[in-house]
Image (cartoon, rainbow, N blue to C red):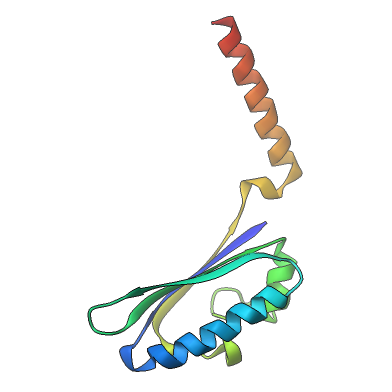
Length: 122
């Protein structure tokens, strides 16, 4: 699984327009095959702007590529029209979850079993 985190700062004069575009982006993301979770959060700033975060969790990287419309994952915020002019600044990060690889899950289970065995000896 892939966790996608977009953080950005929206200028005060663009907050209302951004909110509408963000709602559309959230609805759009939720229609895509491979999406497991999506949510947008905001923090009001003293100047009237907002710090926003758009969190989404995807089944795999291919699903993210389909939603973004290509492989440029770092420079594409994915809002309607992919308009980055809403943001005074933004960054996008992608994280592969530990549970995404079967071998990782098997490794975790082996660690748990070994840990339990050690505790029962002590």
